[in-house]
Length: 385
Image 1: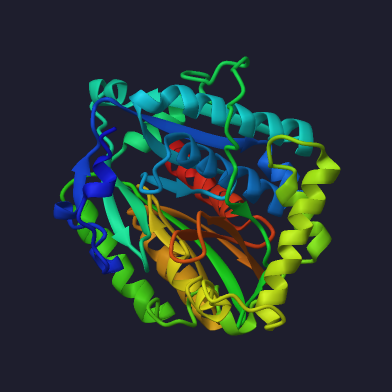
Image 2 (image 1 turned 120 degrees about the horizontal axis):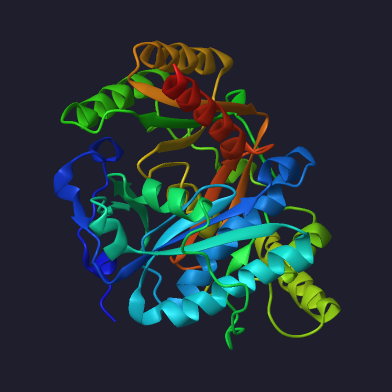
């Protein structure tokens, strides 16, 4: 199987995310996967935002495990995800995503919308998907996306096109292997967590220059390269309650009775805790080193045609960001959404503890979902005058 993303050169400077030389057009014979939880706002208002995050991250685990390739282009959106998969792996991907949908509904009462949009159809509509590779630590990278291809794919799927059929054969493999939620909600060291969504309206030559300008001004306010801006800080990480974590994780596992899956997961959680406390030692695993690697392998800032961030900030920084974005919005340059929370959530996808692990960040109380409501409302008002 050809995997264009795995062979792409990457870049490490987040401020270089608009550099066209960092992007390549996705192959024609790949497919865009779009997933999101229907009615996620209501579920979040009921206090189920951690479940919504797990369901969204589960679809990333599903496509990675179905293709057998860690290096795939995907992005976590809080209540869903977007990914690109090769067409020669579409059948196992369909099966894996159908299992995600089944677990979401039967175990958690959440309806998961899933669409599979051929890239060739987006190309025919004049909206290519362009992909960049932002390097993290160890062997990990995030996919960044330019253009309007993902936006069009999402629009089509929400309109009822390209949906995964209701019936789909179950996979022989466990599609959610590696998905975990073992850390308690993260606490701010600066004051609050700010979930930020920014959508630039223009797609002309000034588009990239405007993003660069906004990034520079955000960095002045937030000091984005400071470890304090990242919501994940090893020294203050606390484990989630074991029973709660085990119930959530085991609900996504395939095969066996729920009590057996729960007990197996609970045992492993306690084993990891014993490693963390030094009660058990393994020559092949350094828990302190692993915890230190969580922050540099987190997706607290990313770009998928929309600039997304969850940042630890002071109330003064929060006010500065609001003034900055409202000023640009008043000029008609962009729309934005913000959500302030006392906590942030970290959902983990771990293939192994020695490098291949990613950590998906969202603001507590539905950070991205509620920021998205503000973004969509500002776009609506702009379009209706």
